[in-house]
Image 1 (cartoon, rainbow, N blue to C red):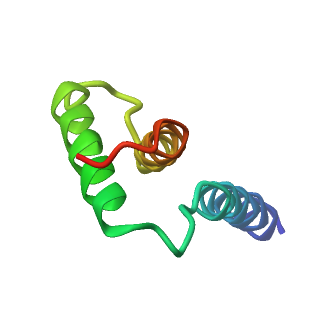
Image 2: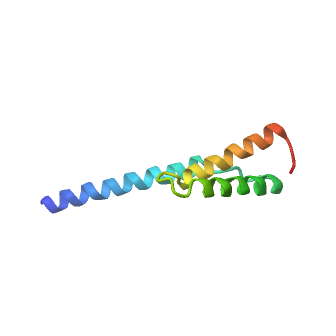
Image 3: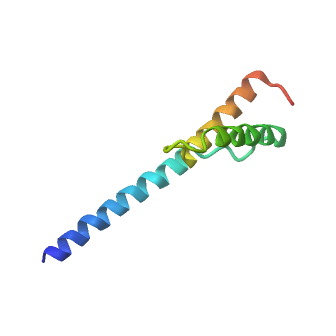
Length: 82
């Protein structure tokens, strides 16, 4: 009886974490129709941030995607090609 209850608690915790990670992955998805020059520029920007934040404990894929999306927004606002 106690084993079943403990297993249910662990399973619900794992499902909760998986739902949070999946939700963050979906929410931070970049648009599908990104111009190639913007994508290249923003990928380079994220690579630079990766190098700077390599040893930070909480630099995650979500923050990488948010940085990519921020770069796309800035590129749209300025409208500059490299």
